[in-house]
Length: 337
Ligand code: NAI
Image (cartoon, rainbow, N blue to C red; front, top):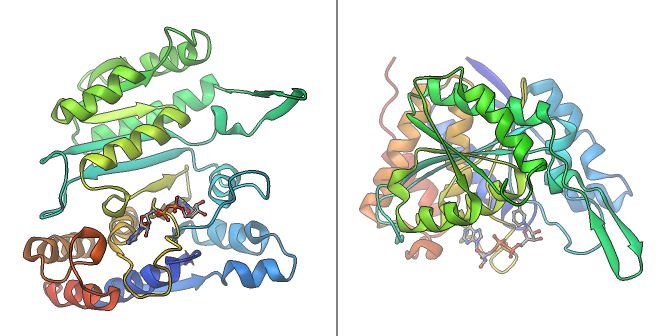
């Protein structure tokens, strides 16, 4: 099978971890033609908006993209490209499987939780204004349509992957209308999936429960803001953002990305850890039906972590990005034809 995939290497360590992942995918024998987006600084130097410099068109054409981290200013400046991509391509589901990697220092072991986060609305609709100087209003938008489709995505995913239980996370005791609409929409969908146990939990309690007893959870279904916070919280249980993948999916288009940032403190030093982007690429390979290669890369990665000899500094080793990449490639089992 041949694949054409859009690659957005990203800023900071993005190009370094992207190269590593490209090399590993090639070594696993997957035939990918990468449509690589130019570096952001190059594009913005010409006064062109990066998001609309051919990136959206390329992803629409190829339907699949892999993305490294992109820098975002905190106050003012341009809109986040990450948020822009999700909104423009209607990538309404954010999928974050959280599992331990062997040998990575973590708060909990045997964690296996999939978080499904609504990706397009809530406080991220970006509707804010100054009412009078000193008073700002941000609107939390929740719609029945978006709540229903994210619930359908989560329950369908659970059914296909044979997951057993979904907790919807909310604050409907306080935000009775907005979170209330989310919950009532999810309940309707849940009733169509009787084989999947359905529960509800208030977000603050859910945060405590995930930390104290993560093994009671199978899948979490969340609105955008709670999903953003809880997916990082869950990642923290297994060693942080460097060891968890992420996928953003719409009806036709899927974009897989590392959820860590650009790591400006180590960019260009050749010591960045490509694991998060590689795990996201494994999800991408499953999505494009390269199951066998996905399994082999996952097994090779887990072997390298179990052996612990070629790990990068952030996870307690001293290997460079190149040494880690080579160790994964050398651990790949031969392709079964
Ligand atoms: P960060 O994730 O870039 O860095 C936090 C710490 O983790 C740093 O010490 C860094 O060296 C380390 N780190 C992160 N990824 C690593 C990797 N793969 N290997 C080894 N060490 C790693 O977070 P920070 O500093 O808050 O953000 C820096 C920039 O990244 C900002 O401009 C921010 O907007 C952007 N960002 C982009 C994201 C995305 O595109 N998805 C997500 C988060 C932040």
